[in-house]
Length: 174
Image 1 (cartoon, helix red, strand yellow):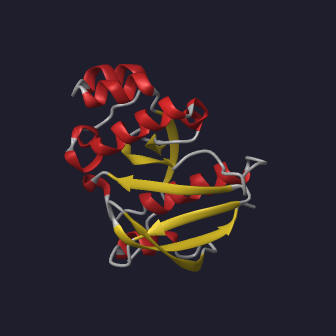
Image 2 (cartoon, rainbow, N blue to C red):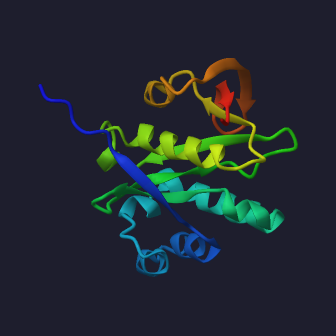
């Protein structure tokens, strides 16, 4: 069986006006503001909680806007396949935490690994980023597989109020 080419993605910012439009259910306005064909998934219960959380985060720390969630667009075809970003800018120790989610219509095609690749490239280009973290629920086999091969080391666990037990993985930003 021939091996499919490794997918590639680029990120498109989702500024507050886009997050507001998504929360209002106005997909047309969000598409116009981003210039990319955001899918109905961006209005689904699976992801809309994130828009509210990120808007609150930007209100508390405006510099977070440059770091948080973006639409992930496949290259070269321009299909929006998910969302990815960091949980915020590097902390005082230089740690950034990645986050990514693939639209169910595009899962199991390598897009999560493509998003991780681009997030790591982004972190490596930022001088203040020293360590990249991924926190993943122990039952999330797909996400655990997505970070495999990127040099992450299991460094511990944490309890997340929304997600429960999470395994912590870290690697150098460069």
